[in-house]
Length: 125
Image 1 (cartoon, rainbow, N blue to C red):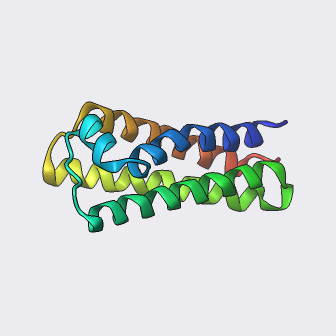
Image 2 (image 1 turned 90 degrees about the horizontal axis):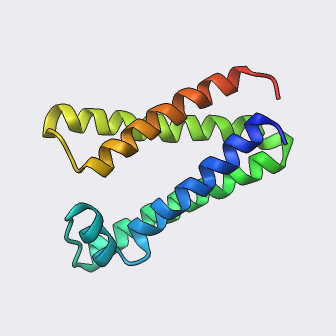
């Protein structure tokens, strides 16, 4: 297994608990992790949709790790996903101020994973 494959798989595995924390039992986990109250069907719906998106992308990254023909696209989608999240968080920092410490950790991870993904995109398989 090469570096790109390991990167895709490890990122996918790391994303699964985050995805599940958003949508498995949002009324409990979001309150405990972030002090965020979700108590309506609309709120549950939004966070479960986010969970589905995260899990679908994680699955695509694993597929890309296992199939050479999908690897470049999987890596590119990982970079867009991570840097997109990071950009949104930076905008929020500028507009809204400092969030929960865990969300700052997510920002650092997203930036690091996104930049590493960019470097791996340039590297031959």
